[in-house]
Image 1 (tube, helix red, strand yellow):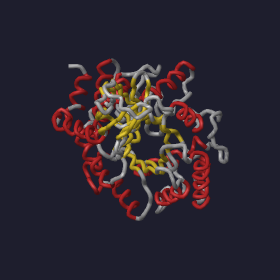
Image 2 (cartoon, one colour):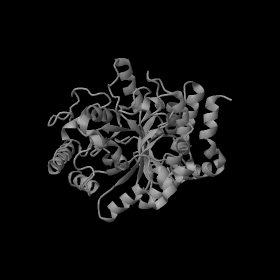
Image 3 (tube, helix red, strand yellow):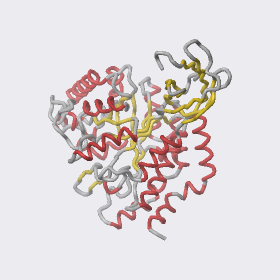
Image 4 (spheres, one colour):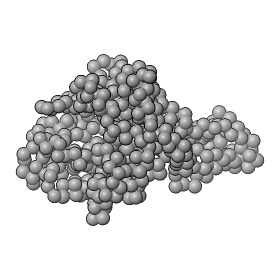
Length: 459
């Protein structure tokens, strides 16, 4: 038995033990939550039904958002990979997470890097560059993150609290003026459960009572019409085991009960196997760590998601990393199978409407050197693409899910009233009749009945 086969047996054990149960819930959830019935009536310009016509119904977009961070936009040292990244991103994703880390957005006080031609900082392309690319490519863009105390600029550390809050307000105001109405959502605060581990970068207000509340007050003031997201690092295992006494759940419950506006709940899901390993033995121990193995248990995912679903708010898997346990096709296939399982669980859940993969290309992930240890996400090999931007099996699996398996493309025949009926995945569509394409949509919460007129000006 190969080492990769041993890892497969270990990581797929929980799924295989309850395979029929999990597969049934996934299939039922996808059918109920991601698809709807549609009725189209086709007529000519005089209102006469197009009886007996052959109609090709093709899904063009997904309402469900599946994205990645866009931190490598124009960041490769060669133009060939930059061009391929730009091409591939819009082929594989419909959403991009844009970096607004304060330390790289404003490394020098009063000189922010919003403009597309700003000086480069690796893995931190300027927001305007990212937003412009997304607009040109038909991709939604989201902001990450208004408050993330791990990535504060050096110049803010040690400043008095009132000056710090004034600078925060200035930051919110500037971002709102420039990007309000242009982004799908705004992450307000990130990873506060982990703040104690990065005290060296924290500001004078990080640990004061009411920090999170004040952040949401500012967000509500400056982004009144926007979607506000709270985000946290890997909370699903704790929610699965602790239920409604999970710390993140209690924080959200408290904020909502006191009237703070949270529009969406963010849930990271990184499986950072080997990120701190500096020897083969430490890597092997990390692979076999029971906590890491648990992160491939659909039962844990369903249990955790069901806890947060109690709020009735949309859920987003904001950051995803699936490791590759080695090199070669066998290792890549395990990563692809794990990715397919995770996405299937999330896609089936009624409250999840967005999933964002994190590092797209191997060898380009976050590395942090500490005095006693090094955090190196490149050890994880969690990219969907090789470093040369050729797709791994996981990238192809993700593409197939949203472009083949969870995709509607049908050839139908209109009845005597010019009507066709079908059940399809939610999104925007085209109906092709006699070489003419007629746009329409199939969306949750709508009656999804439409009359399409062949030969009209809007055809």
